[in-house]
Amino acid sequence: MQSNNRPRKACDLCYTRKIKCDGLQPKCSNCVNYKANCTHTARSRKWKPKVLHDEPQKEDEIRNLQAQMQELQQQLAQYKQATEIALVASAPSPQADFKDDLAQVRKIRHSLKLPPLQQTMHMIGIYLNTVNSLLPLFHSDTLLRLVGETYALEPKQRDPVVWAAINVVLAMALQQMPESNSIGTPYGTTESYLSHAQSVLWAITLSQTQLINIQTLIGMAMLLQTGHDSTPALVIISTAMRLIHKIGLHNRAYSAHLDPVERQQHARVFWLAYIVDKDLSLRAQQPSIQIDEDIDLDFPMSFSTVNNGDSSAGVVTSIDGSTTMDYFLARVQLASIQGDIYDHLYSTRAWKRTPEERRLKRENIVLALNNWKASVPSDFGAADVITTTSNNPSVGAFFCILHTNSLLSLMLITRAHAWDEQWVGVLRDHGRGVGTLQLPSDWNSLVGQARDFMILFEYVVPRYCWLKWVSTCTYISSMVLLTANNLHDLQHAGFERDSNLIERALAWFGEVAKELPSRKTEVLENICVEAVQAMKTRRAHEIDVKFGGDWLIGFLNSLEPS
Image 1 (tube, rainbow, N blue to C red):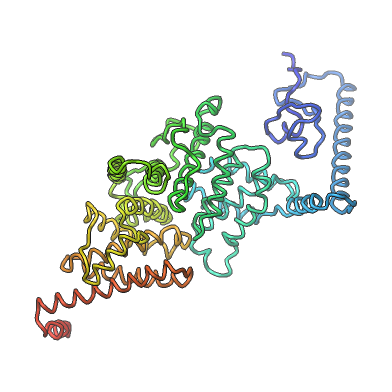
Image 2: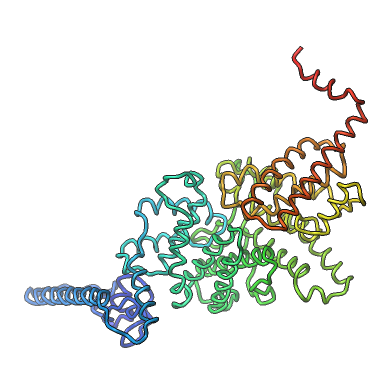
């Protein structure tokens, strides 16, 4: 059988690194990027030599290989020498600004360092088993391959985009490690890893757009949206969405040529960007970048038919194995509803609708929220999720986000959240004995959800401090709801339990107000303090009327041991 002597398309660099070669002449794109000679000397993997019977011919071939190796070594030495000269040279240039930028780029390239490999692999394992198992930003095999290839290179040879992606993954892993919050841990800080990724933002946004660029931007936005200021996250996710449209992730036609695993990962990356985009839009009261009518993709499927890879990513199973839920799909569906809420409450076109059109729109959104809530198994509700996922505590943090967004959406659409001036004003007047408290429809259900969420918040947030700014608004709004309910019904069975929740939330709110002082926060805090005091006074009066003036003495005597 004769050997296959057809010319190989991939050059030596692309062939040995197992990356796609575009075959451009005189140099392919990868050789240009790596500043390497574009040669075709290496044999194809399918090539097999003939059986050689002539010993002199075999010796000639060995000499040729030795000569080629010597030539490659000389080229490598010349490349290293040229790089060192370029770094120390200070040739004058009339373009001072460009020179400074170039020097900065070179400086950054030589600082593309990473933690020790063992530490990185430990943290990546945490990331894959927590964040990525629920929000599958990366395909696990692809991520591990990128890490291996990056650590095989010297810092100055590393791809800045891949380096940034690894730093983003390490930052997200660190959020899932409560022990890393203590001083003196060897893992670094979330802020430092994020800062590293941000330092090469020029490369992520301006280099050739590939999936890894978009994944890195989405990861950065996910990290930034946990801060109290949503502006940086808004800028990053806007950039990610522009690049998504550039390569067509929002349209199935652009990924039709890919194999099923790649096609699935492209869709997952788009839907993750969609989730972040809609979350930030509603939080900042600014329009989202992605228009729903411009999407030509199916929602993620609960149980994918893709047999290869991590096809079960996004799916959560209870500790006893009896209940399963697609968390990723639930987040996508909720994000779609969040987009409708923004359109109804804050968009310019909403105010052009007639009162009847607005009423129908609101009713449809409430119905969609109720249907979505009914699709969440009770085992994963705010009241039970800590128990049913105790085998993986970090899952509770992500369900805290899920219930934060769903409850806040319901509060916004029913105009019963803490930053609605009309709602808070009515509560203040009612506490002062002026006016009647007008309660939203399905009030008892809303109060029950608020109570369950506050219990979940108090359990999860002290352990995962990155949730603080994501969930505080919903937590304070829940406190206002429970206060209103106590004022409305002084005799309900859960009054004392809810009063304790309110007291703790009020103390939390006081700390937040000190950390981020503003006139609006001060006014809201004062109204809450006044309403809580009115609640206590009325409750004491009700008990006094019911049991008479000696009720307190009798109650205290009953507590003494006999």
